[in-house]
Image 1 (cartoon, rainbow, N blue to C red):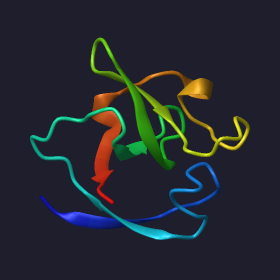
Image 2 (cartoon, helix red, strand yellow):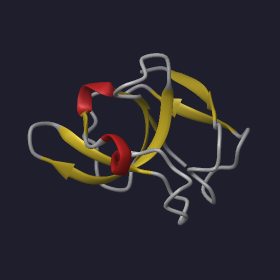
Image 3 (spheres, rainbow, N blue to C red):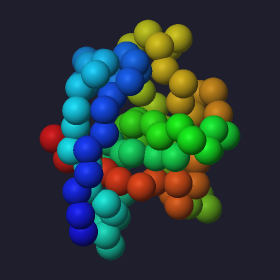
Image 4 (tube, rainbow, N blue to C red):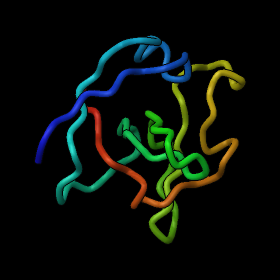
Length: 96
């Protein structure tokens, strides 16, 4: 399992992470994802965009509902906009 860094862009994960903050993520191993985990994910509709979101719900058929931490509902493009994402789009997990 190797680590990589991600630069946070935007305010969707505020107050947990700020715009421009560099965070360390780990590739997923056999680890099971749980509600509350912060993950690095491929955007389901924008192939070149990587997003950082929190798992809000674990649904049937390997689907995850991802959500930003910012309490302003207009500040985050997340599963409220694009729906649940398949677990195979998750490329890493951020452990605080």
